[in-house]
Length: 102
Image 1 (cartoon, one colour):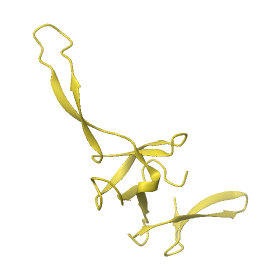
Image 2 (image 1 turned 45 degrees about the vertical axis):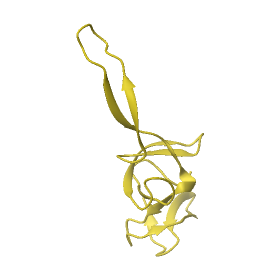
Image 3 (image 1 turned 90 degrees about the vertical axis):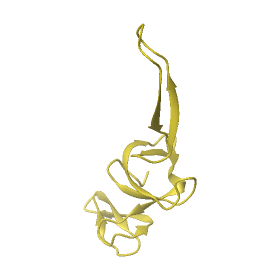
């Protein structure tokens, strides 16, 4: 999976198109990621104790990685990601500026 936890991404499809956010969770088996503050859905929570009220909270839901683009930390542009193998180690790099992505 080319996008990892901690990366900054741009949403290119869906209701949050054009917005950016930080990846807080990566789900590689499902090819999905959870982006902080984006793709929010409302969830109804039942009261747990007597006298407590139920609430409606907004939680971020996973979004497909095909609907996001990584923002390169070097050139600050949305880009595709490539891989380079040097000295038996695999590195990600920006396809626009050729800079390494940690």
